Image (cartoon, rainbow, N blue to C red; front, side, top):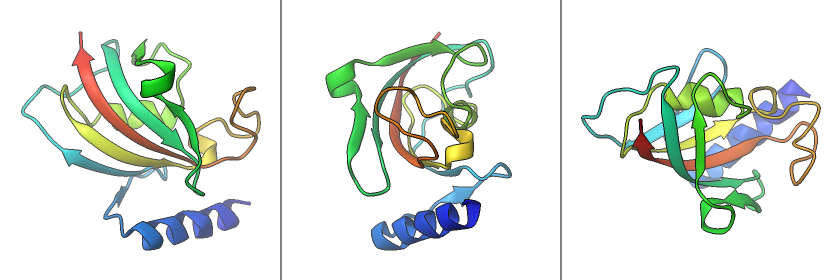
Length: 130
């Protein structure tokens, strides 16, 4: 299953020609807009604009429809891949993420729109940090 997911991610990256880095955990990320803002830390509250899609391009969630996300880093129910990326970012920054299922909702899904073992693609903007 992990090998199949890796092949699907690499196909996605080839198709869209994304230039991403890969973290030690397997998170793929591209922080494509940077600022001089301080880096987010555990305990910070963040406010995000976001779009989440599947590898096939279907939109799952979007702040345009579902509203902005607001949560405290390290004390939320957000997926670990999203929190990992945010700890590399600051206010006003934007990033694209590919979050493998084991860093997302894994074998449970989110009990709503995301079924088990789905890779998620995020496009995020850190609107505020406080």
